[in-house]
Length: 160
Image (tube, rainbow, N blue to C red; front, side):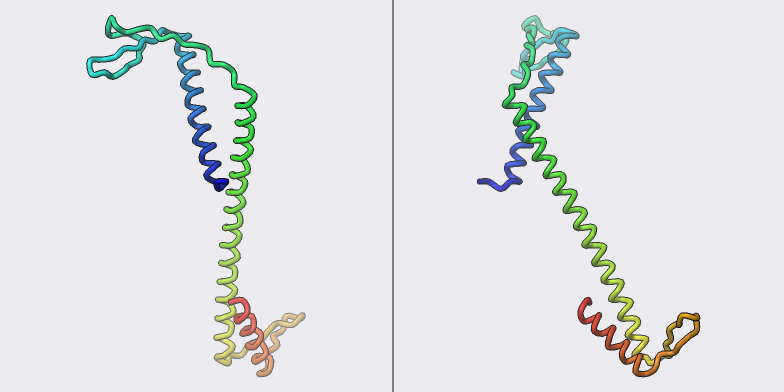
């Protein structure tokens, strides 16, 4: 069995051809109702169509009514439309997954950058503090700084 994408491409190509033929028939039928169309061959062997015959050898083109599509064609078109809808949904799903993955990657890069900066400043032995519930500064002890460095290194090793 051929891959589904090749089947889908064949269905789309076949559908385009059918639509073009149907459109040409409709246009010819519409045009025929409004005016007469003539066909002639020029001195170079090229076939031409037009509303006014330039030569006496031009012949009037007769148009026939386009028959209604059979049940088989209608079912084929319904199946094709379902397939195209599924393919479009899959394409949109993949786009969404790519956007989510890109956002997650960006978030992780930002997180790793913050960890790296925090580690660098902790390792410089600057004075660090946190605010308690009363909004007062509580400076970290040497042991708390070391523990924070270990915690950040562990996260960095795991995530970055």
